[in-house]
Length: 540
Image (tube, rainbow, N blue to C red; front, side, top):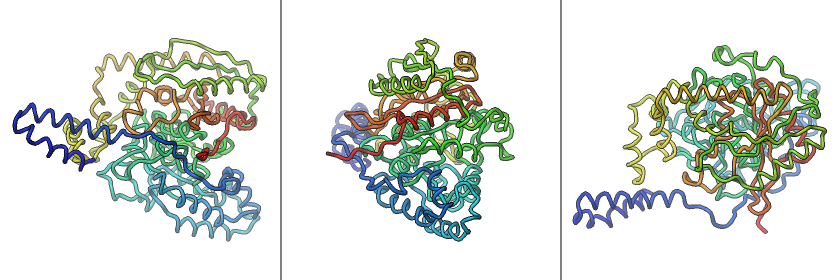
């Protein structure tokens, strides 16, 4: 990109000489156009990744793998080795795993196998795991895709990951992400761009796209991801996975980058990304609870009414379905009809289980993106440009944007755009939007009550092609809202689009503290076959 821009600049030098500043402006605009075309170009022939045979160990759930290892039907070393080999097979095409600890993982697997069969008491003894790169882990890169952190390795250990290891999981490596975890495509100038296994010309989502891409490609049975505006659910949607964003305040954010404080500790939540619904609940139970650091906004109170999803009477749930896209903006992509049909299939499946399903049309969701942006921005103690600056002299976002077409900026177009608009809204408007958000939460929770769920769109379309202009940020409005409303939300995959062969799905939302209801519904839909992970369709 830099070479193309420089050559263009040189070729236009005579125009600058003749026309002066007008020529300079023309040349600059031309360079920007060339660069944007180069960066956003995509499409062409569908390019799925061949996963090979996934009917054996690679296709199993964490629960199934743990049972096999516990009974001696499989060795941890054999399981870990199989997933490492799968990563080495598919990762050159996906660029999903950016931090690796394969030798250490195999050593830990051998140690797990040395434990006598009757003494393997950890629930996930010897089962492999993928984590997000922004979670601190000793010896793994810890940059969050920010160039100024390049070369930094973790020293301590993220508490959620530490809890997973204490319950028997073995970390294989870490997944790629967007710059500073704030975009719906996993692309940065530290590692480059991650691709979607269903079609490498497509976006795997962000910010947890590396984790979702490799789990969908059977390079790991599950991953721990984070979500402040859809960063678990967007990649889950684009990669055909189950992804859960917990109730606000369920899981601590300690030892994550960017660091979060205040109410953002509740808005940003770590959660499981899996191919099988049965893995959601046990993983969530492992990572929940305060860690002694983030005590103010992470506490056991939000989980006090939890019960096991198997104890939930799905038939007795009050179900409301909202098919209309949130936000009244004309800039929102039109909803794909296959996603609508997927939602209708979910409604019909729940009716078949004995639920009464009411389809609701309301204008209450008209300003959802603005509400998310206002509530998140007001809660943040650090602006996004400071996050990108990483303790060094604060960047000038506008200047960095001008440098970008010539390959002279270390930041992404998405990151700089967010930094440029961050904090522009006047405070009176922000205050009104925060009030509107609280009112909207009251409405949504009152409509379903303590024993109900909402079925809603996760995203309007299947995974788009790569590039900023193909990933319009307003499309995340249906996921981001529930971060600031602190309501639990589970993305449920519902098969593939018949033409594009890309995943489709919906999300299930409940009152705060009712994570067990959304996960119980996901498990019931998975059991019925309505919701499931489906491997990529090879080219005919």
